[in-house]
Length: 460
Ligand code: 5AD
Ligand code: SF4
Image 1 (cartoon, helix red, strand yellow):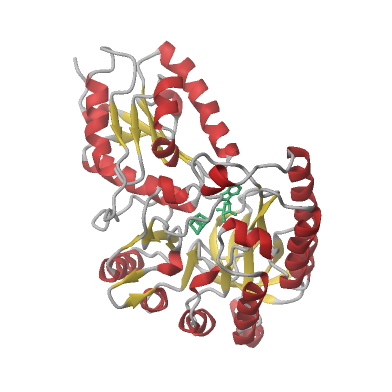
Image 2 (cartoon, rainbow, N blue to C red; image 1 turned 60 degrees about the horizontal axis):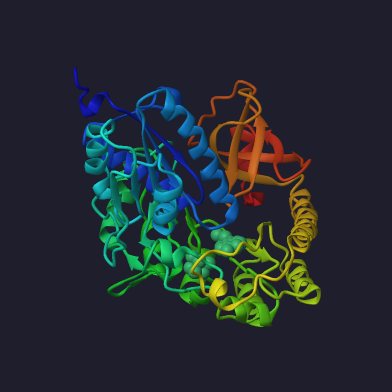
């Protein structure tokens, strides 16, 4: 007897950025509405979907590795395989020709078509081998405004406020895989935040490929983030990823002044040398970036900064790389994501610049910069020993169910022993930091009666 859709179990694997995690939540919601069921276990799935990332070679290779595993699985039993997201968008030809096990390919603007394409692929799965459904049109309008994502946790949630990117940094594939910038109606975003607050969520991260260029009629990002932070019950609001070109004073004032906007800005530097920044099309100089850092710190010295950096971009010399190291030292980031340049097909850099820094030199520069950043992060974290920080409890620590894990407002992970206290996920607790072996802070929960005396000292 034929199975109905509700008997088909879908397993979704997500690669890449937070926007992809969020898109997986949208996809779950769209499939659930059509009656599909889900499983965490790939082995008992009827449909395996991979929500993919195309940003670097490494992400690519991971997906190809998983496709090879699925090929073996598909030889043993009936299985529908779908590739979603950025790789589906950018590699439709390669995926249909070199990976004939893929049944369905759906790009980031076409998820509404996924349930129908899956149903069709399921119905025809024995008839032919090859792609049964492709939907990779990019849209100037799709924001999934009306779809409420199926969220995983009950404490922190993402809301995508805009999608796509118009910046065309020369190294970046995102404008090609996710299309033009478009922003959601602020009223829908605020309603979603209110709904989350009513369900007990405490923290919201506003997402966008270029989040601070958000614009809808006379709403800009400063107005939007303030409105979300004003929603009763939402205690913390974060945002990622911004571009340094879109930080008007009103946004800096909102971050520095609003008690519910986290004192943390992720400020992608990419490179600390003007020639390389110009070649990357970043539209700011080293000095302009450092002036922005100064502006931020003048408003509030305790705002934590994190960043993204690419090592070994086309024609980068040793001296130019050292400019990046000097900038990292000068800013003193809390943390940094450091990447080897990875040429992406069709980008401006792939067409116009030569990827001429050897793999060995790229790796060497990444290692040196990672070591430098580790030393800076460790110093900053150790400076917190003896201080009491306000932590949002997220759940058990990775290592032990006898410990809680939470984060400071500045997004640093804190771990402490439960010791039978009544604390639980979603609570805010003052933790006194006692030791810092590496990037995680360890401490002790301050009992409520003692904590009130500590409130003046609370940081983070
Ligand atoms: N190679 C290496 N890193 C890249 N990023 C984006 N494109 C590339 C690329 N082609 C990095 C940037 C960006 C982060 C999300 O990924 O640092 O900020
Ligand atoms: Fe890519 Fe630049 Fe857009 Fe960020 S701002 S998504 S790096 S093109």
